[in-house]
Structures are given as structure tokens and as C-alpha cells.
Amino acid sequence: MATFDFEIPAIGELKKKYNDPKNYILSEELVSAVKVAMHLNQPLFLTGKPGTGKTQLAFKIAYEYGLKDDEGKIRPMIFNTKTTSTAQDLFYTYDAVRHFRDANLKDGPRKPTQDYIKLSALGKAIALTNPQALAGTGLLPAGTQPQNSVVLIDEVDKAPTDFPNDILYEIEHKSFEIKELGLRVEAGVEHRPIIILTSNSEKNLPEAFLRRCVFFHIPFPNTNQLVEIVQKHLGETSAYASDQLIQHFESVRKTVRKKQPATAELIGWLRMLELENFLRDGLNMSTLSEPQKQILRFSYTALAKDKDDLQRLIDTYTK
Image (cartoon, rainbow, N blue to C red; front, side, top):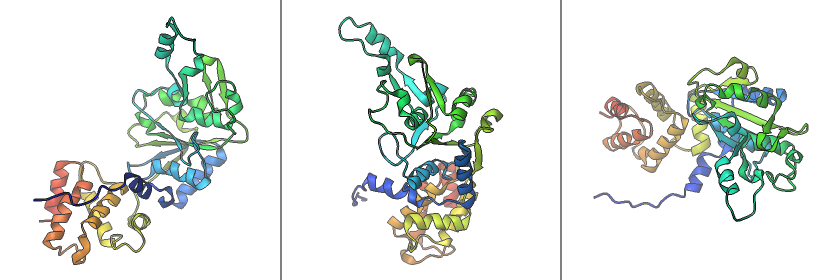
């Protein structure tokens, strides 16, 4: 009977290892796109298949320039776009229901309107370039100094159709209005928010919106790039940073029909093989031992996201 004879891994250490921005590999073309966006003071709009590194680029930029969020941590401020997102959500939220409820309480002091307002990712980033614009509101800690920061607006294509058009002025001029306070917050002249927008290309975005962005499409890495990525995560001397295993992964991507695995799945798959000591009998993908085939069968669960694709991989490579 099988038993759990291993310790629970430290989640913090796993995240640190696999999400460490220093391991993110930049192509020369992507560096150029970031440079152009910064010099033009325009958002960088990234497209590409899931898992190609769109989201992690924002962490890489924050890491390379030492840019902190509003909590003082070197990382971007993130807005995860939803199908219900509105333009205001990108800048701040106002809890009107709680405000109304509190205002109708018979006992207790009345709270000011700003107590029901909370800055969101892009609102914080703009405000942090010019903290004086919110002086006396309590929306930023007292003594906050002007700073640059990175904002990640993730999967903007999920938003309602009118969302991109509703933020055209704010994106271009780096400003927004808090209607409940009758206050417009303008970005400072010495600092700026670096804005990264991502899309999985699920739908077209308005041309007026795209004109205000620098566009870059991140293609899926080629074989040499995949080897370099794996070496960054597993170590340059790792036996699992193998050309044969990378080529097998590329074959798997061509075999599955529903969702092709991305680089994150590749790293997870290789880690599974490493944990199971897959290479203990050497490596020859054309003459695998039966124990190696068994390991491959269950390791494919890290690559296939559909039962038919999983069975297809098992039938194709381990029979």
C-alpha cells in the first residue's frame, strides 16, 4: 500500500524559486519594447499565449529598477481585470453601501467620505508620483514621498467592451478623478507609473486604445530559449535541462489538442521527473525502461489539462 513518506514542501520557498524575477529571460526585442514604452511614457501592451511571461515581465521590471509598491515591497501593483470591471475600478473603489449604512446610524460619529474610498492599482501608482495631490485625505500615509512604480493591468481583454475606451484619457494623461471628493489627481512631472497591460488575444481592442500603447507580442520560446529558461530554474548543470526532454516537451505540445502546455508547465513537469528520479536508468526516449514509462504516464498530468489529451499522450509515448 502506498503511503505519504515525504515532507510537505515550504510553499514560500517554492514560490520564491519558481517566480523569482531574476530568472526571467528577456529577449533583445522585448528589452527594446520596454525601452520605447518608457521613453514615450506610454503603456506597454503585451499579447501572447498564456504562460509566455507577460505577467512576469512586470515583476522583472520592478526587480531590475528596484521599484516598490505602496507597501514598500519591490513588485508591481496589480489590477486583475474581471468581466465586471469598470474604469473607476482601475483607480479606486467607493463603498457606497457602507457609507449609506453608517450615515443612517443614530449613534456614533459621522465618518468622512474618504474613509469609504480605497485606491486601486493605477490610482495608487499615479498618486504615488504626486502624493501632495491627496494631502489631507488619508488615502496615502502621511509623509509619503514621490516615487516611480510599476502597474500590471492583467488580461485587459476580459473587461467589458467599453472599458478600454473609458480609460483613454486617464491612460494617456496619467490622471483620474475621485468624483466623491470632487478631486482630480494628476501625475507628478518628475516621476511616472510604468504601465504594463496584458491580453491573451481573446478579442480585439479599440484602435484608439491601441494607439496610446506600445505593442509587443511575446512568441512561445524556441528550443534554445526553452533550454535557457530551464537552466535558470533548475540550474545550469541539472541533468533535467536536457535537449531530449525539451524536444519531447515540444512534441507533447504538438500532440495535445485542447490546451498546449506553457513554460510554467514545462518547469513543473521537469521537477516531477526530477523528484521521481526519472533519469536513474539514463535517458533514451526511444528505449525507455518500464519504470520510466510509468513515471512519464503520471507526469503527463502536469502537461495535459484534458482527459482525452492525457490519454493521447500516454498512448503516443508510453505504449
